[in-house]
Length: 102
Image 1 (cartoon, rainbow, N blue to C red):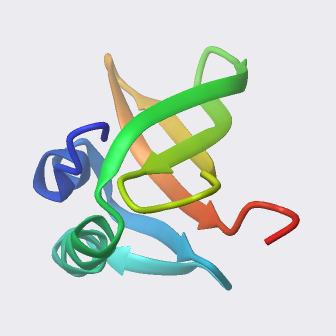
Image 2: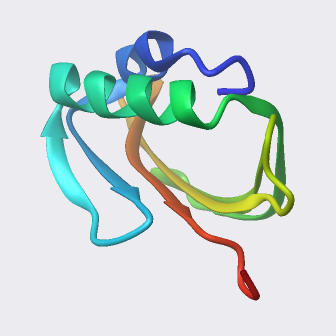
């Protein structure tokens, strides 16, 4: 994710991935999610990802943090949810919101 690799990110995903960019989230197929994330990473190239909070169980992981971008004053808020299936962790949700106060 730090590299803005949409293809690599969705390859780690479930068959349908929930993506929310600055508004309501939608479920996308992997190919649709890849296109949406390619556009996002092109428009907002990442420089650093900082996960500041996380919660996990045996079957799920949720992380919240900051998405620092090349041309941004303030980082975006980032929320990621993973689900364990068998021995693998799969991306289930990727949500980006404007930082508060902008």
